[in-house]
Amino acid sequence: MSLRFAIIPINSSFTNVAYDIKSKIKSVVEEVYIDTNYDLSFTSRIQKRKKDNFNIITIDEDYNETKSIIVKYCEKGSRSHSYEVDEFIDLISSFDNEEQDTDDNDAEGREDKDKNKDTDEDTNNNDCVIM
Image 1 (cartoon, one colour):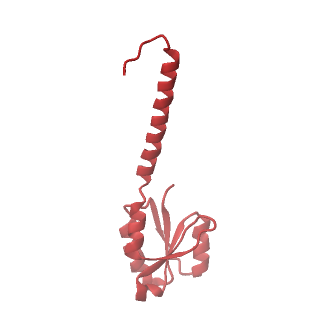
Image 2: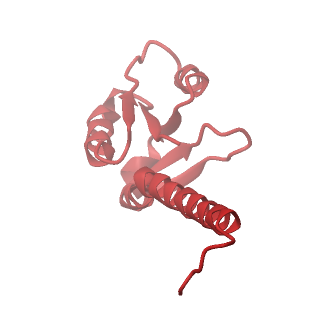
Image 3: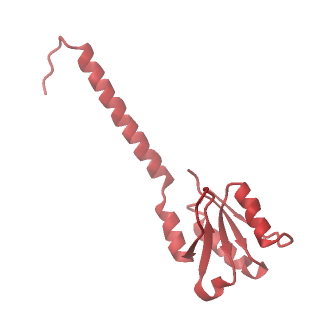
């Protein structure tokens, strides 16, 4: 699973905030896109990025008061979540795609070794095994 985010500021006054967030998450996230097409409505920009299977980060007027962003995940049935920026960065930083792949490979490797061990024991019934 790769992390792809589209950051959508509600208007041009939040563009700098969007670039700040992008710079903070760039090392963790595979792809970050900032939608600054203010000719389209805010809702249209969100829908367009959802079709492209981006997780959506929206920045609106609440940011000035709470420093919170709204995150809409691209998975069906998921709900929007409000996060403080630092809390969100901690959350996505804890997601380590490589670690999950390594754990899966290690588990598969152990299964393969166990299968080979069972196969070796079955085919060498006449051999003596010292443990």
